[in-house]
Image 1 (spheres, one colour):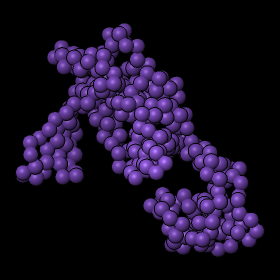
Image 2 (tube, one colour):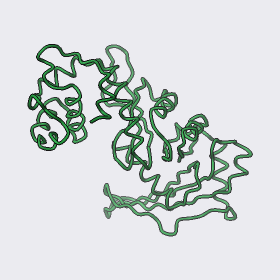
Image 3 (cartoon, helix red, strand yellow):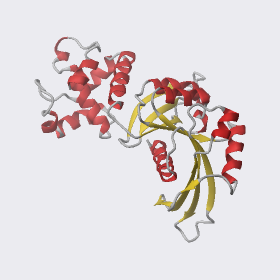
Image 4 (tube, helix red, strand yellow):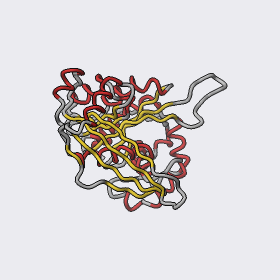
Length: 303
C-alpha cells in the first residue's frame, strides 16, 4: 500500500464534501483487485468488497465501512482519465520491475470500435503481456494497425526489460525496435516474415542446408487442446557471423525455426497441416527454450 499510495497520492480527488468519506487510494485498490479477479463494473467492485472484506481489512482501514457501487460510479465519472492513466502507467512500470520471464507484444483491433457516424477508424490496442504472471503490463491505443510500429517503441519505454525476453510478431521485427530492447537490457525473440524479405530468404536457405551448424530439439513439444494436436520441433543456429556481415542486425546472437504440425483430434478432421516459422534471437538459447518462448507468446492472443 505504501508504494501504491505514493504513486496515486498525486492524483487529484475530484470528489467534494461527504463524497470523500472513503479514501481515494483504498477505492482504487479495491477496484484494481476486483478487475484482476474479472470484475468489469462498479457493481462488481462493490460486491467484491463485500465478499472479500476480511482480506481487504488486512491492508486497508475501511474507516467508514464498505463503499457502494454508487461510490465507485461517482469516482470514475469524475476522475481525470489523463492523470489517472499517467499514475497507472507508473504503477505498472514499477510492478514490472518485480516480474520476470517473457513479455509478449501484440496488437489487436477492438471489435465494434469503428465509428461510422464520425468517420473514425476502429481502435487498435498494442499490449505488453507478462506471460508468467498472465497480466497486461501496459497498453497503448492507436487509430490504425499500421501505426503499431510507432506505438511499440513508446510501449517498450513504459516497461522495465532488464533480463526479460520480449517476443513480437513480424510487424515489430524492425532494427530500431530490436536496438531499443537491447538498450533497455532485454532480449528478443522476433518473428521473421516477409517484411524483411532479404533476411528471411537468407535464414531460410541457411537452415535448410544439411551442412548448416544447427542444434535441434531432442524431443518434440506436443500440445493437445482446442480440438487438435500440435507437434513442434525447433532448430537453432549460433553461426550467424556471415548473416551479420550482410544485414548488421542489432544484438543478433542466433537464428531459429519452429516447425509446427497440426492435426485434428476428430477422425474426419481433415489432413494434417505443417508450417515453419522463423525467428531472430538476441541470446543463444536452446531449441527447447525457443519452443517454450514461442508457445508462451501465444498467451497474448487470448489476453
